[in-house]
Length: 154
Image (tube, rainbow, N blue to C red; front, side, top):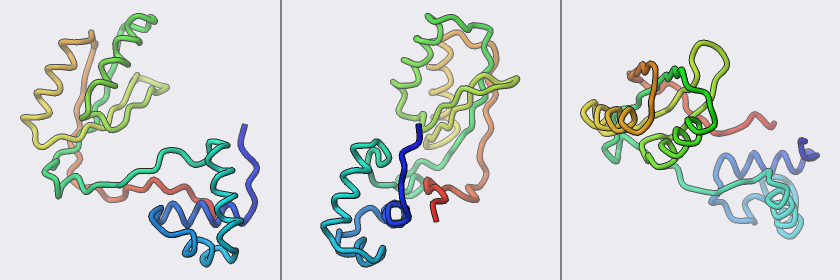
């Protein structure tokens, strides 16, 4: 069930999405409030689960991870044991940045970030050796046009 948030909460969340490293003073100024109420609202939003893990976004290419693959997976297995093994395999692979179970002809889509095609092949070989998969299609992203974690709050 969605948490009720007001306009000031939305402004705080927007400000944090833009730059979570801002000081309370900066956020309070941006939303037109003072520091203590902003701090209390942030604590409330965290305890309600609206604000999750805070982290730093790294530039993958600057760190040598130049290849991003979207991996489409079809499986003929759908029992709990297979799903458990598949989930454990994905969670153990740092290359997997995102994994989604889909409706339709494709069962899963993975976002896999690696240094190059050779590194993707190593990932692929490990994946198919650990879990039975009916079909795997890998699509290399040629250019990232837009990437955002921000929700349209304001």
